[in-house]
Length: 338
Length: 290
Image 1: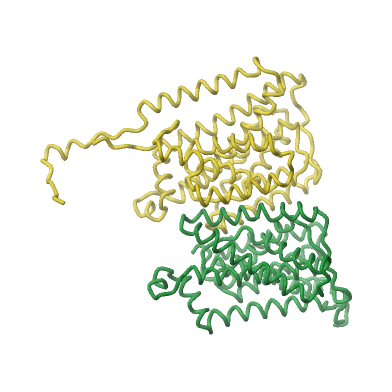
Image 2: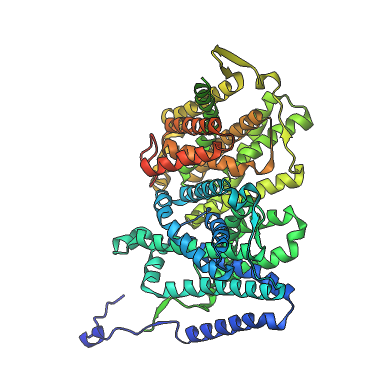
């Protein structure tokens, strides 16, 4: 192999670096079209359909948040149910003070973001699997504290005091709320990843020690992600609360099942991609819709699928497709054209 | 005296936590895998004992051996068929595999045995105690579990520090690539570690089941937290720290229960979080941040 010395003039003219290009425009246009079509659904279809889509929307939001944590910042949290539950329960408090549930969702995610900030100092004492279980313990502590308040229904859950009276309007509003939370989660992730912070996050994802040695503030990046994911999960929790007009049981809303669900969706769809969690959430939504009545067998299949995919398809469904074709709806990679 | 009694019972309770944590600590120490299925494997061990006792008439003490052999064999299979491959993929994959196992185990148990409790009666041993006078009493069974925990931890210590296979396990934990250069197949070391770890987990599970009088499918979600808390309170990489961690957690829960019957879990978790804040390396450990 011969080493060619490039003429000085060519060294100064760096090869052009592209990101996305036409795909960015197409992807965003397509996404906007899908979101607009989804927003119009309450006028077009009966409320039973949109009621089901509410679930899909908060699943996508939850999966996107977990993907931010584990896929970009290497934090495998098993304790996001702390923020889902807090979102739901703080909505009671905000609602009791006369704020409607839709604006309340925004208030609640802001409050939970503030709460997550000090919590992150505790959680960041641990890493890897110990981080996973540490966050799980924090979620348990939050649950055990919340159920000590009789005004929040103690151990038996409670209902929202003030919701839209008209059922048709309420369903439409709930659906739009869920849709907005989903859009914010996915597009927010995209915006963050295209920013300077996103670049450091992707460096952290690939190798946090190397990223740190190159001057990336790893802890700061992780903390921002942790707080963002907490706010997102709180918003999803508020949507879950509005959708079922309250919380049936604190054990359920603070259940580790939510984290398990998030892990499953992200792994199936493809960790470390923006589209993967969306694909995973759709896959889980369909699985749940058609096989949930087969009871525990379905959960056994879910567990087995998580193992098989993480062993034989570690990039997940979308990740594998994107890796083979180079296709992306939300391109964040830079490419050099030589 | 009630407080002294609460502390005493807490120390005895800690024996089970310490034993449950030993297997977890070993797997993490050697393979850097945080086994999220740990609690469910404990429960599985309890089920094996309970079912062999109830359906096949095996004497209860023998069920301990049956359970350790069965779950130990499962450990070999899981390591060879899944974890070896997962460890080659990255850091997240082994954790996800154990996560998948933790979803499968309780649901298979519900499917096969329903969600009713499976009893494992130990007869009069469950209530027999040594009276120390002044309202203090040490139950024979809790005393046996503490003795068993000390025995298991000591054996592990002797194995790791005084035998050739133990030295190889420690060497593999330090640097598997170098150990391979020395002609040792690290996968065999991992398989051995898994078998030992799973067998001790089964023992902990059977003793836990005996203590509770029975076992239900989803209790693993609770015991996995106790096991992890014990390891972190005691400090990673320290077997005696693990024993101390179990005792601290046991006393916290027991004293919490003495204050109010709905407090033991919260008290245990809070002590764990306090250790994280003020002594993140654990009571006896080097560093949790390793």
